[in-house]
Image (cartoon, rainbow, N blue to C red; front, side, top):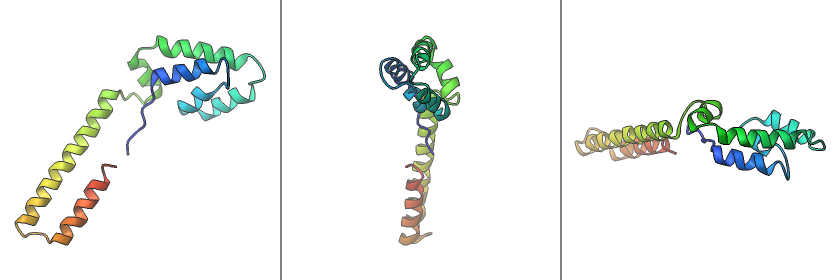
Length: 124
């Protein structure tokens, strides 16, 4: 299963938007719904707006590695794309081997199609 990577710039934009509109959207985006609800409940006070501005600056002040460590389970975009590439490569190799088995007559067309669909379902 693929993990949706959080963007540092989107988090900062949502945080800064919270200073003039609805506070807490950046918390929902970053997977912190309890904090997001707290920001919404306190929206009648200036506390969430000030906190959103501070967090927006904090997101921009962090480097990508620190942001990934805090909000992307330590996985950078390069690591995620490499693991997806490795997975697709392994499935492509399995499909080639499966096709060779079919051409050699070791599996039927029906078995080939079932296993091919199963492998392709693993990608999405």
